[in-house]
Image 1 (spheres, rainbow, N blue to C red):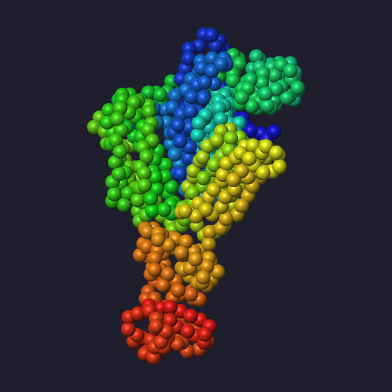
Image 2: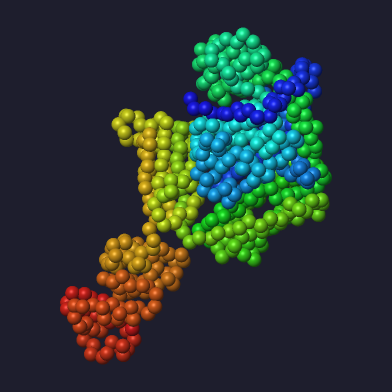
Length: 621
């Protein structure tokens, strides 16, 4: 099994507070509360790495469950999401930073590096640039997209220094999809226990298997994890003593066993952590960070949207949080984009609560950004009441991906661009459901891929086991407008499936609907398939919002050509005639008589041209 965690030792002589360690009896200590702050270093405002406030709050709840309120030993340590920042101002305990803006492609493709020998942005560089809060008074969590270039996958899921480092290195690093119990999570990392494990390191705990090569310890105070009530062991995996050490404490948070069987610290580990909190990390329990400094404060705490977007409209979510001590009876939220105001109202916003306000169909084309303002008559801290977010509108196509999942679970998928960057991905467990995703696509090729651990793909039941699905789902369907551009097909069975799909530039011939380089009968048939359409029609050559007789005449007038639909139809036709090397055209009126007048002087009407009995055209004068 790949190493999933790093316990990094500070070069400080006070590693883990061992030089100042005090004796602690868990039965005698009073419960303490430790403040935490989360710094989310994401890859874009709407990217999945920018996890929600709710996901972060669920991680704090998981810490409390693991340390205090769960089925294991009550360590008498609990946690709060900071309510006061280092300057004494109200906060929700969450900061957000665009790692791509700060560090460029190094962060995009590699994330953070735990050491100088690994790929990614330097640990200290990243933590310093994102504004670490005084580690003597806060436990800093850094939620990142990748660790050592692992693409948010296997390998190191998190790491922490054991003992104070006296600088910004002091804190916990953790993958976004291994954080909390709700939101964007990977299989096997859905109970928030990665954070519990790393907090154990931060408060001085080694792995239970540290410094162990076998199942024997001659001095439990100086060997192994240096805690005497955790039996000697090497690494365990799954939910059994795979190390071969029969006394191994596989339910201990500080082993590598599966999260489904880890639920406790030992009493000795709890006492060791309190010893740290009474010495080297005493500032954490003496901090005022858990105390809100004002009674009334309504703040904009996060905004989720697509900074780079290709459609005229998009939905924007704004999270409004009550960071005061009292409920706020009324709050107005105003979003302004391109001079247009959108307003929503909130009532009875309780303290500590955050509400995601949805602004639907905001017109973003032509706008460089948008502003959000919250208005509350009681608010005592206006500094967090306004914000501005940039927009980058780029001409492209909006791709909608529908995932019609069958009953069985363990299926995942990815949508990948030509640079092999995953633009959208997800993973599902058991249960039928339909999920919809939107992503902008531009000229180039993309790959849609899916994997199923059971090999049955989107098929629930194949009664005869003949490869023909009897009960299943539509699977993956990609659409641009009303057109389906890729699909797995109904009930497709697979272990791995992959398809390439490309976006090509607009054809040189706007009426060449089949893309064969010439306007012909098939293009007319395609246009006829949309005949009678009114409004935003895909095949409306003259662009008047109605597909009808005028469009048929325009198509006929350009058969055999690759002409622009703009400008006068007759001049386009005449231009094509002049370039025709086959001979002199003969013009007929609708009665079949040859017209001898110069073409440029013909009266209003419909005419037919012939070139050497080979090419015919109808044009309108």
